[in-house]
Image 1 (tube, rainbow, N blue to C red):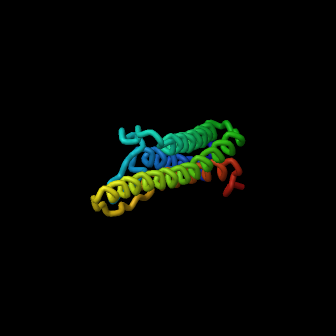
Image 2 (image 1 turned 60 degrees about the vertical axis):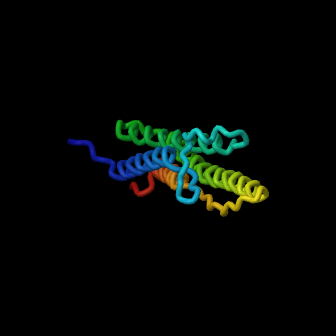
Image 3 (image 1 turned 135 degrees about the vertical axis):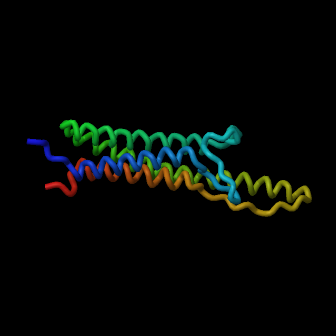
Length: 166
């Protein structure tokens, strides 16, 4: 007799994959948007001193990715017959914390960039050059990374708690 497919486990594993992909895409796309132009984490412009928030953002993305990978590994092990509940719980918690950190770090980074842009505008204004104020926002990468981490984490926690299974 064939082994019964764990549909709920498959759904949670697929959600972990989607979360991992979102976090990776978020890490590689624009994390800060300045008047429609975006900057990624890997641009050379972040080498300026006084921008530790870029390192914080990168670490936050890495935490979210590690959590999502742990959840994904737990899902694969579940299909191989190895049910390690603690792995899903830990991975889920790490991924959720990583997703929240991505959001916080991204907003801090956008605030730091906004402060620098406004300081440059004020300096130029004091020299008689009129510079319009620039709008600085967290880019789509921050939102994708946060959603990806939280989604993968939720899938890991719900899968470990066997939500939806009898």
